[in-house]
Image 1 (cartoon, rainbow, N blue to C red):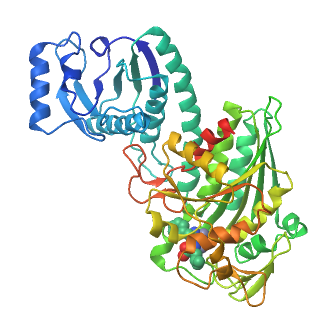
Image 2 (tube, rainbow, N blue to C red):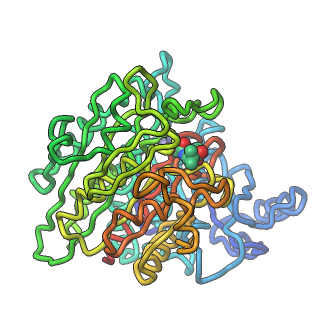
Length: 497
Ligand code: BES
Ligand code: ZN
Ligand code: ZN
């Protein structure tokens, strides 16, 4: 989809579908449209009343295009009440509605009026990101690919200067959407093809296309054994597909002393291992590498936005499978930081892989560590399908991530790292057990387990089990399947870090 901006108004646009965003109960927005004939405006007002269109977020109203225009159709999309805060998310929602409506009607060229005084350059970024995310489809495995993509979107700005600023923001949105699309493709690809080797190849591709700004190191089983990654390798030992430990490094072209580590869970399929999952719970488990996919998507973006901070990305990719070689409940393994772990449930494998991944990245002396993991079903029980659980040992850092998420339009909510629950992961025979002795608060005890491996460094844990994979659409602009959740927050965070 090509997205362009120019100074102008809807009536002169050659697009098939003209779109006007309106705030709630603001009929006057339509009434003041310059150049539109009175009869059309009256009809629009009448239709809005009859069909209960008041401009709420998510609402839309289709109208015939006015005779003065060259368009086929006209669409009003709601932005909700006028406010300073949160306009961008409303714009994204409205953009998603616009795009799905156009697709449904088979209209391929769109024009959107952003000449209202409430819109800034950032509004165009919100539009451009949302329409690209909404236009996403995953067709790799289909014979007949439905070619229902949108061709073009023309954004109309109030003046030439704003139009210029909007173009910069649209470019940024295109870069970010590219990274998110990469992450979604990786998550949506079935585990038969999205093996650890394939994940490593995808990460290598990102490094290759970065003209040297991103370096990659991929460690195999032998190298991980040398590094004594007993926890990660315990998960991998039951699988036919080789594990791959992926280490991406982005070095800022501008001098900086800041280093960030981002660790993504990369379990390419989680059968549960010998503590086998029930069939229904396994159906979406190709998504268990979504944290790792977000890291790969982020690096694709870093190479283009070139923020002033060094970033290490680590993914301990493996399958969690059943075989004669699988790790058994009751087995004790030793992680690379020396701590022994009694594995009482082989389905609590994510924390085992993260233990060694985080220990590994400590060598790089990061100023902060963020991990993203589809870690616990309990997090979905607590926060539902749309909200990430955030845990941190550093309130200032946690606040920065929450603010970044808010800006990015990703929902995150803090959960406590309650020290009183720490004893629930004490083992009778090892330093730790991988599942708690209580069946309550499973997300918190998983967070406490990971905390054992961060060596007191500033750290944020994101349990993305809910929003990483949408079994129903997360919003008007994020449909079913892999969502790339986390990428947008990380980009916002990295740029301010
Ligand atoms: N990958 C799952 C968590 C998950 C569940 C992610 C649903 C996305 C959707 C994780 O490895 C797991 O199986 N966790 C167990 C932990 C339990 C055994 C302590 C869980 O949540 O049941
Ligand atoms: Zn599991
Ligand atoms: Zn898992």
